[in-house]
Structures are given as C-alpha cells and as structure tokens.
Image (tube, rainbow, N blue to C red):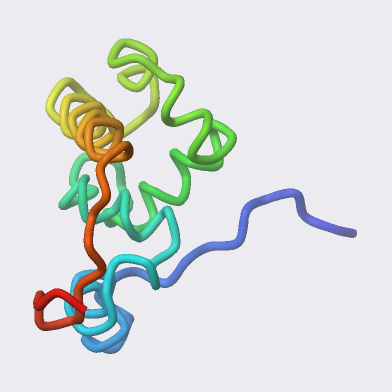
Length: 117
C-alpha cells in the first residue's frame, strides 16, 4: 500500500553544519539553494509550527504549489497556513517584493567572497 504523505525532511539539527542552507549560501552562493531552503532563511525559525524552518518552508511551498503560488499569495492567505502568522507573512512578502524590485536591474555576479566576478 502506497502512502500519499510527503516525505519527511530531516530536521536542520540532523544535518551536518556544512549542509545547512545558511552555510551553503555563504560558501557557494544563493543560486545553489532549493526554493524551500531560500524560504527557510527568510522564515528564520519554524517555532510554533512543530517543524524547523526548512521543514516549514517545504510544507508551505507544497501547499501553495511552489514559488508561483507563494508569489501569488497575499499576507492574509499566507496567514491561513499553519505556522505562518503576521510576522512570517510580512517577511515573505517583503522578500518577494525585494526580488521584484531588483529583477529589472543588471545585478553583477559575485563570488562567494562577495567580490564582483
């Protein structure tokens, strides 16, 4: 019998420190991270949801249908999701707005040290 349950991600605590999203972003750059890992960095913590930030981000993206669903959700819609309250919904909307504002700009590629490539 097959289960329709989503696979359970290991908690952040169970990951090797070098495999955690923040450390990978600092070492390799943001382009290397999955959308759920980027969202986890925006969420900071999963406290109150029963999950860590990475697990919460993965679940939220799954419930909304990915990045497009996340981008299309307003703050009130985000707050209907378990673990997303006013603070987290504001963080998500702010991060998405920053992305929109920078999208038309010609942003220079940088190395992991932050120096223009």
